[in-house]
Image (cartoon, rainbow, N blue to C red; front, top):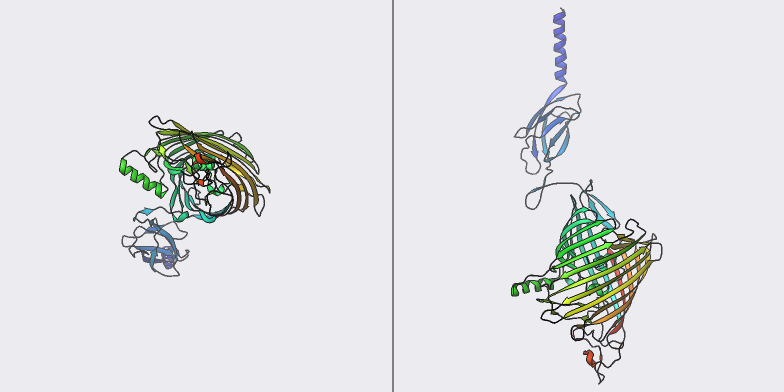
Length: 523
């Protein structure tokens, strides 16, 4: 009887357990194309045991009535999905592909990005901060009024000085990249376009199109310039953007940068001239070797600092102008005035060297800065050597408690930080001088000087309003390649020939006043 009773109880228990479980079957397919998904895992939520789908996407799983009644589907190439059974025993499941493809049909990695505004700039960044990219947009609207007793009329006007669109990225693994375009003057000019590998904060190497590291004011972005235009000496004698390879090494307040550079590839006219000259002559395109050493005695102090630097460059003629020729010229003290008073015109050259010394200092809201640049140009066929030089000195002060920021990784000033919630006001003054007169039997391209005053209003991080007032003065040789009047002859008629000018020293040459305005938005 005991045996019979035990057997009956076991049968009853087994029937009860079978009654508490059911079998669920189904098929898993892709939401993209409806094809079966094989080897997808299927498990009851909260359970350990799993099953996998067959090649035709079918599956079978036993579900305990006391379980969560939720099935979880997983596959490496598809998003995880949870389905509440609600007593069902038959399912048709579709899964969404989590693999994305580029325009060439190649699978690509995916990472979600967090978006946020940082000092007025939109930044997209991965959660692990390994990858980020951001936009750098800048629009500068300028206007200028000219007056004075000039020999040549100067037209006042307005312009879009810059309309920049840049994309900058940190690609992970210490790689960085940038692409920067300017759309002002109804043209699309390439500015920065490079790939960079960062060993540490101030030790890196990069290749592409970028500024040669030579002059602090030239290397400072136009977003953070104190005056509306850079000094005329830096716009004439110091090199800017060229194709090349450049490396930097910094430690203990010293920063050394060197590079080899080639052609100007950003300006349409320069690019076309290079291609035409290459085709016509078959000559090499020329190169330059540029290096700079910067010392920063207070490189760990954010409130004060000193900056001293020496730079040099050896250069051969490039093909983006004329073959075996160079030209030093500038639009003088303003961009809306399109006249080039200071102009050596093109002349034959074997090679030339540039040297630059700069010094700067800052203490909270006070900033002082200056540079001296000299060019020595070696000419062929015993034509001798031409020497040109120039300098500037400037100072500025933030009136309401703001301070100037200095980037020790680049050896240059960055933005001014306002001292009040509504912003800050900066006052500044600069004296500048450029001499393109080498010798009477050589090149006499003219000399000029200017005294410029500025008042800048910084509204938060994005908006800047600027007013500049300048007094420009040129000598009798600043005749723009004999196209501009520099005085009057014995008959009282305007003349472009400095030898015929009857005005005494200091009276000949063009002089004018300029009042200019800028509205800048950067975001």
